[in-house]
Length: 343
Ligand code: PEP
Ligand code: MN
Image (cartoon, rainbow, N blue to C red; front, side, top):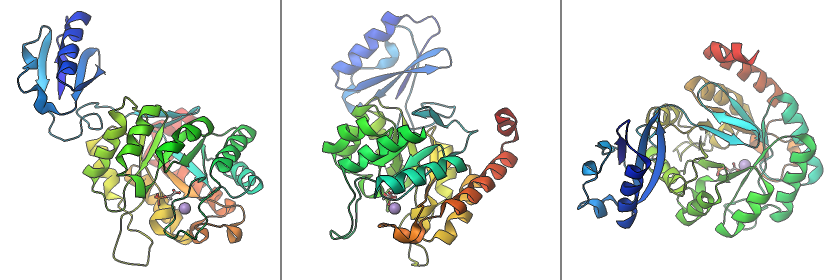
């Protein structure tokens, strides 16, 4: 629910309403509604049934949201959010961000070599998993804390911010101190305790869509993070479970358009996990750009044949550089004003 205040409403008017809402057990977020004060009320709104908010001093109107998510929705914010990751801005509607790097951090040398190559090609964020959720318990599950430290080292050496998956609430602190953005993987999109922890951390979050999640489930998962006061959420479509083994998952590009219609949050696409096949990554990355995504996250490995994880979908640095060039051209055609600004 959004409470819109009259232009002349005072800070005291707002404070009284906020106190009443909190006393009922709900939470509030102050929103800048283009010069007009708005207070978003979140929580179990049933508890406010006997507290009519529209009679409070200074209140112009109370908007009951039509969607179950309030902070993630368009009604909360009409323009597009920008999320800062290190010194890189993601989202906003007119920039296209490339996130690239190996599936897993395997050794400092390969991480550094890949980081240099992807940065030179135009990537602005380095990816690399230190905690790898694997289907088989016998598969390589990542280097853990050592991997996080390698990411920090590589980030400093190359001058590029990093994103890495966090799989366990107990690892949030270590991830926050070593990487610039926390990734929530598809398997953990519904791990609500983890979402609350990354929300509390205040660190930027890349929230992958669950393999069987509807767009509404996904936006409600984002709401878990946002409701902790952490507005730095970037969504990432990575394919849902399909019926055809020709691709690893079924890339739902329509979800990009749906999210853009329903939410102000930036939305990226991961064509690597969506397809599972290196040859299909570039076409789907270009399609993601055309569909309106704010960027793509692509797996790149400087020695693909040695990759311990997801080798079949990794691009070589050369192929990534070619894709990055295509994406620059394509984005420039689709957003000529932004392209002019960049030059
Ligand atoms: C990843 O990006 O490293 C990953 C495991 O992706 P997903 O959670 O989408 O499968
Ligand atoms: Mn992977």
